[in-house]
Structures are given as structure tokens and as C-alpha cells.
Length: 204
Length: 120
Image 1 (cartoon, each protein chain N blue to C red):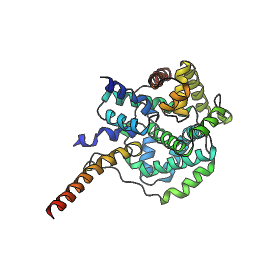
Image 2: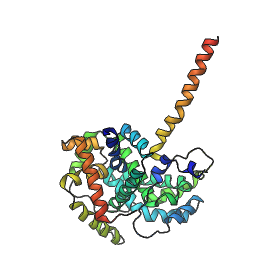
Image 3: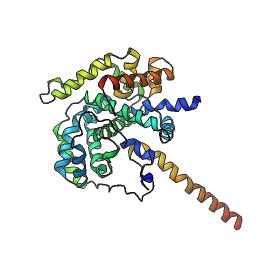
Image 4: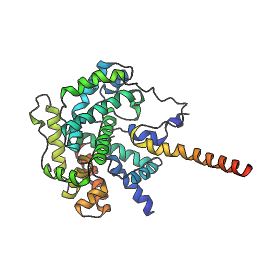
């Protein structure tokens, strides 16, 4: 009967392990959120709204839309808090997977590829004005570390990671934009993620 | 098997939501049976968490104020219990599972129609 619960597909959105750092109390805060505890929910929000919003803004570019997505994501977290299974993976991966999916769905449904391409073209080199936020020291360190690791990728690998994860393109769209075969994009994405994983010391 | 390899190669794309709807469905079918892919997926997603943290930036405080006043009116779903049919997570897999659940009913309905037509 335990098997029934282990239906593999059910694991996908939640089946995420390899949280960085020691196990924190996010799982506990989420359990309290599931009981309707607004203080616990606020703590979850304070912990994760930065990356959720930052990621959404990176993908959507538009601040107001990114804030809408942030609100949708946390409403979803509130609604589904009781369904999160800590044994199956980390809270951060769950929340950020939901956030990425939401932002990408919105960008794909709302914008024609051409207008997106124009806007993305404008912000290619740099788009993070967050370095002056005083209480974000650990975020700044993380940003520097990730950038260091991104620089270790080949140009094609880092382009593919940027276009897919940070821009919301499908692999096919990335292939078209970069004028390379789809198989090349697939391979570079995989290689890029593996290199990043190793460089960042992500372990399961 | 080239198709197997091809499907296997979808894990990275799946982890960063870079698949078309059709590829995504194939990836989910494959992931359901591929233990190694689960590990890859978990690691890729954990890596993606770091990419997201690198972009962290606080939203305006009104976002929290809106949530603070709206969520008390949002119904929280109960935990999924063991006796339920294989539990399905939210988000990306629902469309697939829904399709799987609808098909048998369609077949049953078609059979019934046929039986009625032939009987009458």
C-alpha cells in the first residue's frame, strides 16, 4: 500500500531533493501554514519571496507581472501546503519549480515570440539592480558564485541555460534563435546543468 | 534504442520547463519508469534553485499585504491520503493524468451508445 503512494508521476513536482545547506525549518513552517497559521505563512513568504519574485521578474521583465506571479505562487503554496511531503524533497525546490512554471506559462501564453525577443535582447548583459539591498548579503554572495560558475560554461552552454531557464524559451525556440540543431541545444543544456551542478556543489 | 535515448535526453529540458507540451507528456511518461532520471531531475532542479537565488530581489510590500488579506478566504486542500488512487501532484502533471482518466469513460460511453443502437 505504500506503493500506491509512490506513484512516480506524483513525485515529479514534489520529488525534489538536494536542498542546499542544512535542513531548515521551512518544512515545519509549511506544516503550520497548512493548519492556517498566517504567521508561519509569512515566514515562508519572507524566506522565499525574494527568489520567487526575482526569478519571475527575470523571466517576465515586467515588474507588475512578476509581482502578480509572486502573489499567485504564494496563494498556491497556501492552498497546497498540506500536500507538500517533506520526505519527497525540499520546500525551496517545490516553490521555485512552481514559480518557474507559472512565470514561463504566462510568458508563453501572453506574449508573441517576437515582442519577447525584442525585450530580451535589451537586457541581455545585466538585469539585476538588487546589489544595493542591505539585508541581501547572502543573496549577493550567491549571485556572485552562480555568475562565476556560469562563466565556466562554454558560450553555447551558458546561452542555452540563459535562454531556457532565465528567459522561458523552449529548447526548440532556443535552437531556432541560435541557429543550431535541436540536438545541440539539448546536449548543451544538459552539459551546462551538469557543470553548474558540480561547480555549485549541488548534491543529493 | 534511439527513441529511448531521445526521451532520456528530455530530463534536462523538463527540469527547466523548456519542453513543448508534447515533449513534456513524453518526458513524464518516461520519468515515471526511469529511476536514474529522477535523480537527474532532482539534481537539475536543485541546481535551478541556485540559479533562482542568484536573481533574488524583494517584491514590493503590497504583495504581502494583498496575500495577507486574500489567503484567509482561500480554501486549503486537505492532505492526500493513502487510500486515494495514485496521488497526482499539482501543476505540470495534471493535464496528463486528466487525459488518462477521461479516456476510459469515453470508451465506456461509446460502448454504451453502440449497445443501445444495436439493441434498439
